[in-house]
Amino acid sequence: MIYINGEFYKKEEAKISVYDHGLLYGDGVFEGIRIYNGKIFKLTEHIKRIFESARAIYMEIGITIMDMEKLIIECVEKNNKKNGYIRLVITRGAGSLGIEPNTCKKPSIIVIVDDIQLYPQDYYDKGIKIITSTYRRIPIECFDVRIKSLNYLNNVLAKIEARKSNSQESLMLNKDGYVVECTGDNIFIIKDSVLKTPDTSYGALNGITRNVVLELADKLEIKSKETLISRLDVINADEVFLTGTGAEIIPVICVDDITIADGKPGIITEKIIKSFKNYILKN
Ligand code: PMP
Image 1 (tube, protein in one colour):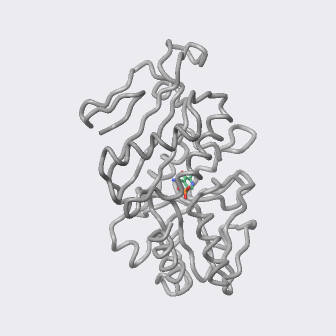
Image 2 (image 1 turned 135 degrees about the vertical axis):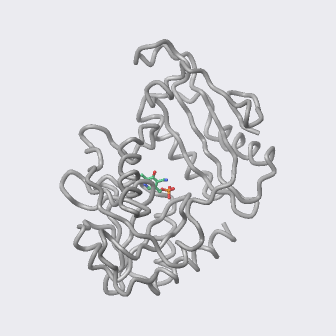
């Protein structure tokens, strides 16, 4: 059952207005959230992030953080989902044609609860191939892409580019040429036993999985650093992996046709994956 503005609908009947500015202009924000063993993973963090995204685009959601949490829990219960994925979308709502957001009376709140499997298991076991995208991440002076908005065409085009090169993901650089993230995931490298990820100030989303990985590294006594990373650092890394709510933690074994280390998921990556699997059982 899909929630739209106060009502639950069957999947086939869940529809929104063609005048919704989320559709017409990508005027809205979203979150992807996991359910593991009947528990919603990092719900508070996701709700906090969507409220911050909404605030940044001058959108009043119209309900409190607490009521939003209750709503998500209700949607999961209604679908009786023990393991799965929640897509929370909040758009500016239906308005008239023309970009003016003031014509939208009320935001549309949509909650989809479904299954998810971003990649086949084989990719988790053997690692994925990525390329460096020719599309640079949108610079902060144009739009701060750390706002999780419905404008994902920059990422979509980079993803298409990856597919065209028979790769699974695209590495996105910022306009200065430094590594930011992939199209829907944060990136980590390991060099000389130190775990590194781009600082969010270079334009990377403040990923919730990313933050869990940093916390786990600390517990595992793996030294970690949020720092400037270049493409050269990635191709010469000992290990590379990506993190995201949908993809979880996925090893990368090849970048632009250059094999990373011995072309297999690394030992530290596997340690972190194991620790992540334990973590999601307990949190
Ligand atoms: N970067 C981008 C561009 C994303 O869209 C996402 C979420 N899919 C991530 C990174 C990962 O963030 P999280 O771990 O919070 O899902």
